[in-house]
Image 1 (cartoon, rainbow, N blue to C red):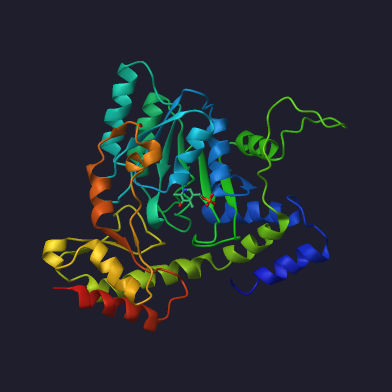
Image 2 (image 1 turned 60 degrees about the vertical axis):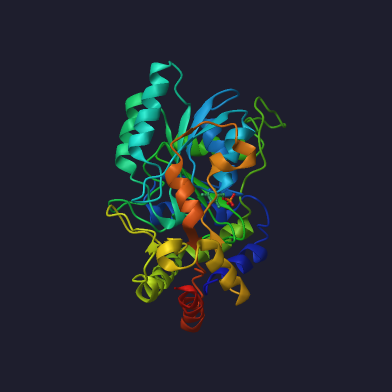
Length: 364
Ligand SMILES: *Cc1c(COP(=O)(O)O)cnc(C)c1O
């Protein structure tokens, strides 16, 4: 936490706005828009809730297909299943580890020829790095398929000077406890279309029709963000730049100490923008390095250092094993060889050195 969160929370208590509505919610939405350069926002209870409503708002329903990056957290695709729709996964490129624009083009062309286009494309911006948005958006527009951006991990990143999440029909963000800024749990849905965010707020508060009594013509959800948590979010927005700088610095320190080791490659920073390095990730070539990813992870664990493999691709997950995937070899390779290092914005130089020494010991 920064310096101001507690003050905003106290204000919520003193004004008795302990509800999923209130001045902090409105202010958080406005301030969030200013930070990322979006026109409209709706604060909700999680990134997953935001994605669920986003898919619903672009018309995804039972039996529809939705294209989604395969190298990501399951929360990117679970809302597809909530709606009874079917995920179709797309592999990554090696430049950004995000959705491969050429593969998406080929997949959409194939579906267009078959006369059954997906209802949406979920473009994930992984580990604090933007995907190559322009060609992906162009392809989506060519086929008239709405692009939804899962920017849960990418708050503070840029693509050609702008924030990822602001290019598609809808963008979503997460403030879960592990994200670059947090409200403990929370999410944001942004759009340039005010009717989308107002419909989001309607659906997120049980879809109450305008009437003096309780009247409902649609199934609603209880997905709004608490005013108390929005207060935390307002404080966190004030330290976003510091958090990004701290995460980028972690990566620089790691890269300086380990970047020249044979067999070690850091997740590249793509030329189109600035990555936040939400997590510092690298791949290990076992032959060149002298130990494989799992040996390194276990050696770190022995020193009480937690690290994790890169996301297991969704097309390899038991729950999605029957889903189609275009490509998949890149994501599989990144999963086999990829490791996420400790990346918290509160790591000290001693902490970083401890991790570095443990990895150096594994080298051949
Ligand atoms: C965290 C995350 C989500 C879900 O956000 P929650 O707020 O935890 O529901 C979705 N997509 C990605 C890529 C994430 O990392």
